[in-house]
Length: 243
Image (cartoon, rainbow, N blue to C red; front, side):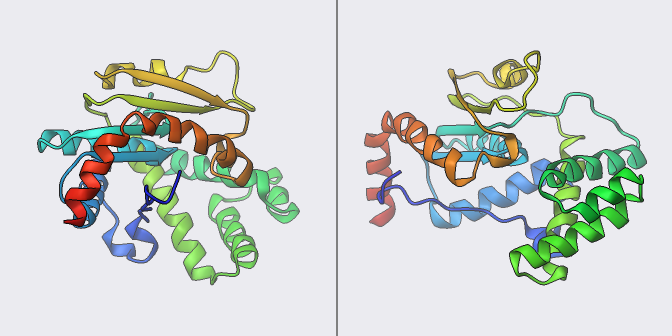
């Protein structure tokens, strides 16, 4: 991407502040907007989000536009809005945990797969996943448990979120490997919520690997090219910020 374009990552508060977890995607987006405006008070803004993060980035773009700010770039990486929204809390919790488990299981050990085959309780499976990931990541189980709990909570929030419409242009990146041929495209899924121009790029990887080393090697040039169209505005923005 080049040294002239620093990348700022936002971490979900729930990982280190369990009692500060947001009650909605809008609340999460509002918190993130406040954090990025501490670094850059005025636009143009360049936003990117992967998976659920794409939905959050879209919500952030909407908040910024409502506040009169320019969103010059929005990239949604294999991100899709919720379709079948369910309201029953028990169903929400079960579906949210299932989604997190589905994302984690491909890289899980045999002990976890054995629990799944025995149709063990979700909490038992999550606990064992937590232990395995703690050993792999060399982090305390408490930290990894907070990551998993935050992932489940965020997955639950997206099921009750209805996106608004943004005016900015949007770049969609789709992970194609393992994706059914008849699956709805991101362009179709997001069409009701995007008023600007749209573009789509496919990368041959699985959803969970989109930010892995190989996929990022393919993703970087795509983003650099898309952002190149806004290079002049970026330089003006940086000059204003540095001043």
